Image 1 (cartoon, rainbow, N blue to C red):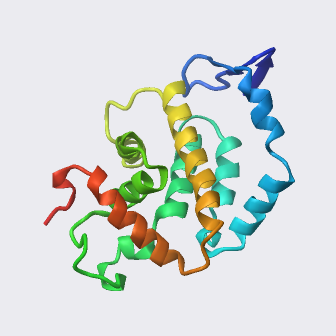
Image 2: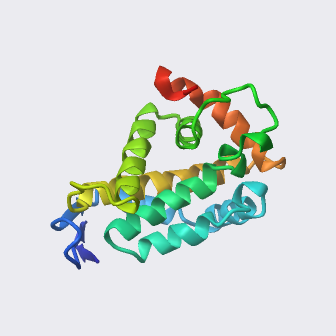
Length: 200
């Protein structure tokens, strides 16, 4: 639950599977940022949604994430990222148009590489992989999983938000096939992965 206190927002736990409240201060630039969400920004968003980069349910899962708590929120944000940067061919090698390039890279790292290229941030690759393992541990029932912290929720939230925001920007001068753009991201982002990411 989000509570506003002057120039701060408190993300307060509403159930037992999240951490203590997490207060986020709002600096003076917050009002300027809100003012920039105008008709021009809305037009950019509307244009992006009409392109192939938004043909997957990115917005659906992003909205769903903000209506969820705890691990449900993290899973929805992760699905937002994968809806934006994943391809069916990541899981089915026979569908890949170029079967030699990055042929041994697993699906998780293919999405992580595209994420790094889209955001131009090598740190986000490690953050995504960390959240991926957290989600896998939850889904597959691995032992020793601790309570979901506010920091983990905020990390997932920020990654998903940045993916959606940067895809809107990338869509402004793009009119081709979604797979072509994601292949470009994969090539550009592979450098952010550790050498052992491409497994035999």
